[in-house]
Image (cartoon, rainbow, N blue to C red; front, top):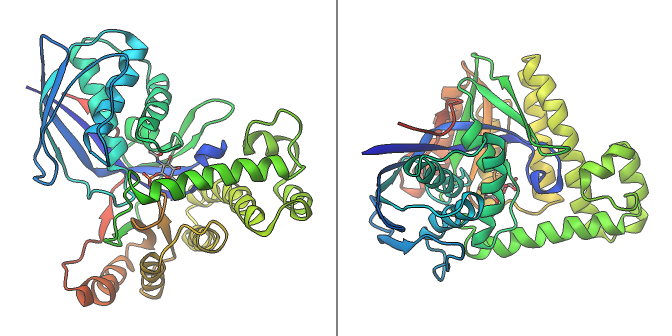
Length: 374
Ligand code: NG1
């Protein structure tokens, strides 16, 4: 038996920037998808899921793999199979069992971890390899199989995570990962809202609508020079302030707010990397607060529960908090000093989880290493 492991992630800042060509700052979690497998002689993939909500999976690898209807978990496995087949050619299958220590649909990227775990298991079973950056990009595009026009953050951090560090990931001009150590006296707290952000269902349409709106805003802004592909190209020619001033009269209210979120969020990632390097917790926290306000008011991807969790964390002593991941449910991330972390966790338990009659789901996240096969 071989074991493939792929971690989920929490994104510290840089939300809905990846598919716009701007950077992100996630860290890999110490929670993961674990796939125990052995190679098969034929092309079949046969996997059980230890979570009884998810039925067993059995399909044949190939150039064109038909998806299962609905939000089936097996489509993330199929996505990896099809992407790899197209990249490296014919593959033998695997059989085994998938388990997860990641909460499902919590904005912590269990779906991309599933794609990554499957891909590295298939490569191992076939004694093949794909260069790391190439695999990150391949799987990001491959996961669009499930119908979400997503960016490349989740696959990159799951494969490239570094223990003790967050990673600044740039997608343009080409994929680049730069570890930035998280100070030992900081605590990163993740609090799931318990409202599922199922990208395969309703949230998918809302997500894809944002991708379209960003593209429309870029085109109609009148700022992007001819042939600009994304916001990276846009901001290669003008400053963020200039882009906002010029775009304002060109765009309707909704598109301007989407545009403003993307442009200001990209600038916040640069600033956050500096504050992390300089170990300025208060300044880093202020950037998280500004990011949440922008996601709530301009990008409109927050929810009552996420806003409540952010408010409780900040009142409980966090330097700052924000929704993390796509939004529409899922989790928040809060950053606190080691002395304040307990009071934040207690406040979350007392004011969010306990009134709902459930055990606290909040936890302190340790920046962890990336995916591996052993
Ligand atoms: P999650 O939180 O896993 O739904 C999605 C995208 C990311 C990124 C974030 C928003 C996928 C697999 N994930 O993440 O690329 O765009 O939303 O920042 O598409």
